Length: 107
Image (cartoon, rainbow, N blue to C red; front, top):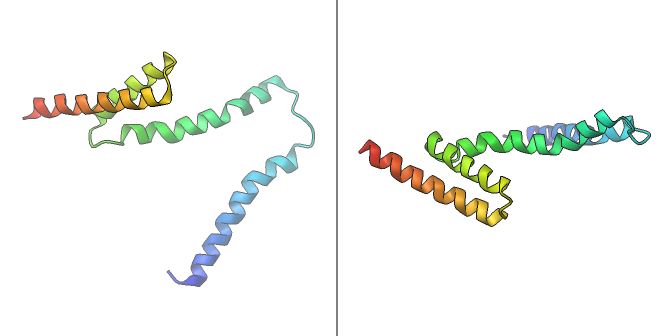
């Protein structure tokens, strides 16, 4: 890719990123008072994070079944209120054990 194309792509991406962030500030002149809209806007970051994380969690390993086991363990530990380190270690151990069981059953 030559430098001219690169800078054109860079400017288009920078402009679109800026517009996505600037349009809501320009459109909203006053504080939003509608409770439905406020609740909708409150949950958007969690929804976007979930939409980006969930598929990556299922395809993080070479085996979707082992990844699903790790995801399930992570969700259970998180719901129980465990810390981030405990959730990460428990889900990693669950994936490791699931991989061992799956590989033992195949051979």
